[in-house]
Length: 149
Image 1 (tube, rainbow, N blue to C red):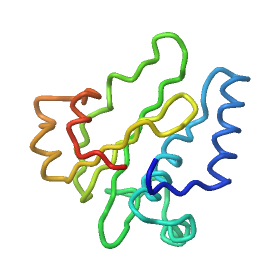
Image 2 (image 1 turned 180 degrees about the vertical axis):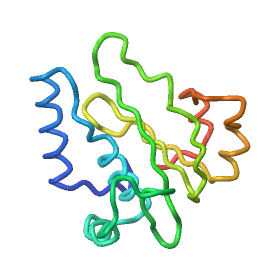
Image 3 (image 1 turned 90 degrees about the vertical axis):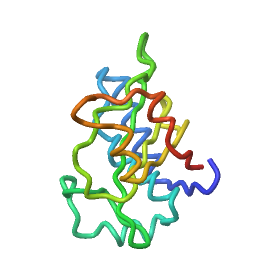
Image 4 (image 1 turned 60 degrees about the vertical axis):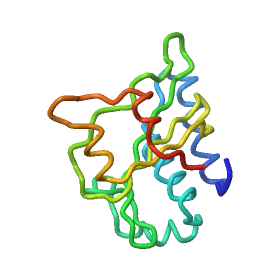
């Protein structure tokens, strides 16, 4: 993917998580960490700047996942397991937290290779996905955002 900076630690995390899944049939919950790292790299962070920016944050930080150049990013992701019937059609729940500027959605394949990345500004997202009338977002609807590549 154009502009993407990978990192050996990311690859190690993926390899260990996939090994765990092969051994115990359930993937450890590493998707949030991977998607936040990947999104940060795609918007311009380097592994070093991202590491420094994340000092003092927690996994339950309210409102957004990371900042880059004064923009607050919220990240969502999906990954099919590769098992029968695991195709991604649902892009998750409609978020009701709007303490971010840009939402990034990352779609992975079963090996955590990025397949698609879409971004939404908060105003467009709120107009498109009215949480009062819609609980879930289809992948087709998420793909109406701006491609990030």
